[in-house]
Image (cartoon, rainbow, N blue to C red; front, side, top):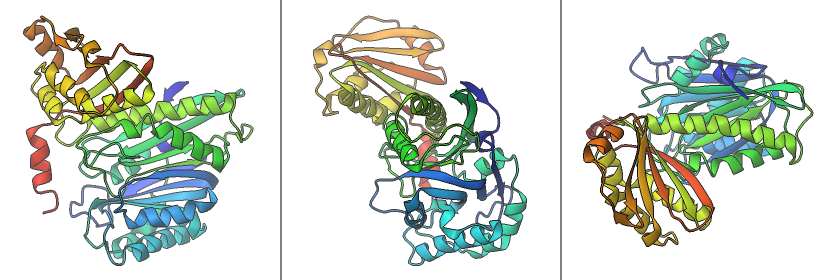
Length: 403
């Protein structure tokens, strides 16, 4: 397996583009993105667990009932959520896209991201669909920009791999910076692959993968209304179609996981106002469920996140988060250490503090990527979660996000 360039355009038969159509006031920022497959593709998706869901999710879910799609249209700047005519607007987005591309309306995935409760005017999208179609090409980066809201960096990756001697490619783009919390796919993610795989097996692969990737990311504890991860697989690589579990499915799962983990880390590291990527690795748990619960609890702890911002080795906050997690843990067996590019420092043994150099600890915690290691010494279960530090800037960004 090899990381390659191209993002969502790395796989055969996929093009993408992004433009500014007028939804966002800032004309220098793209606010509309399109992904297109030359042929119909197997399609799978997972959606937010929030009871309040954006209208595009309802339309997309209906369109993907047959497990097939050919295009993705996504706008930023407006979530099209909690609007009386939201469904109508989302359906119209699909229709104008389908008409422009000459495909079936039901084969269009629709997504929106931005402010909740603000009516979305279809006019800018309708008037710019021709320009958007013309922008299609090897432009994964433009599409990645078009779906950004408070993101500060574009998020994309692609990898190549082999199935039965046939080279396949898979790539993805994502947006996610705020309202990020592990309840399904806490962001918008679009993944494309030229692997031949049935819709049923593609859905199985995605549903399994998110349990250890997107469900293990948290920035601020808020589960968004518009979260969705979609995968399109057009089969143009020419491998024998994957229709059941086995070696080929395992290889595909590994490739998918490589893409999703990379995007998870990028999303967590680009959390609103964040200065550091935090990773919590839990080992020695009674089982995987316990490990996941502990990892999530630590990564979601506001006090731990604040301590990491201040490069303060306040390991007591980690123990506190473990203690209230609800997981079956013997706190008298817990070991904690912090790791970064500057090294590793143990700070807690058997649930109690140990002597350590505050100066060295601070040097380790001043790095951009910090790993919080939690050893529970009670079994073989393990899990990893990703998040970021909590800074003054987070409040500043969200204090006037709408106005």
